[in-house]
Length: 396
Image 1 (tube, helix red, strand yellow):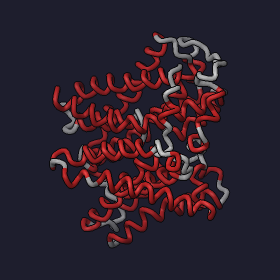
Image 2: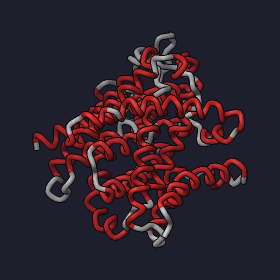
Image 3: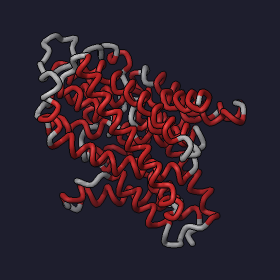
């Protein structure tokens, strides 16, 4: 069995090796694979080789905690809340409708599945977070609510599988189908609107998030200084946020820590020098890969398979149910097809997939607002997910 330090090295080393191969080997097929899925599967395979013993759980848990604590500020440093106040047009409205949709559908799912799923309220909070922001929110909320490893792994697996089906629909026939019920996209000429003129103000950091090879910037020698600066800033913010854990009541310590960390990260984003660190977002993405390897390395396939049916149904009901409700609300509020598809992608699949959807529907003007809503979703997801879990657990 591998010692704890070796497993920590694997958790960091495998994502780095994967990115090096993607960047240097020239295998185009590998670039089409989602690194999160690859790292997650690698961790599960490692867990079922017999190389991970019970004593290693502490080291892997420490790795997960560190990855989550540092990824939150790194992913939120690039949020420009001052400029995001201009997000009052169609993209902003669609983002609100997506958030409302997932909360309504998750509430229904909890009422339907609570007798079959012991941690139903907590699972509901995780699902709200992941379909408002993305995998970082799923990870953070699972830690905040102390969700069991098996439940987290099953929800994550279900999300990866079902989101792939959703994305396939979005990039193939979704525009043709939804154009029958939603208005067509019309560019807005006003400089205050969300449209082509917003692209420059979105910032290079936000655009980098939409590129499939955005990780490659981390492999350049010229990026070392920027990586160290970003990590140093994240360590400071994580340290301040983590101090809450020492003083908060035991039952709510982790929740308060995650929410405080999120708040401090957003506060730090108002500092121009922090917000303009262009490597913060890619480094945060890399730490999510580390998290996926370390979580997968603790996977017990027997428990995972036993929990799978009900949780897969729960997640599927929430994903596709919220998407359908989002479409219905978009029709009521006259949100156009392109805006709905791009903002829905940013909410369900996270910002890195916005560029793919925008290219598939033939509207690159939607890249900037789509990424902006997605990164704002990262900011909102933790609050909304924790609040949903608490409310559902208390009321039902």
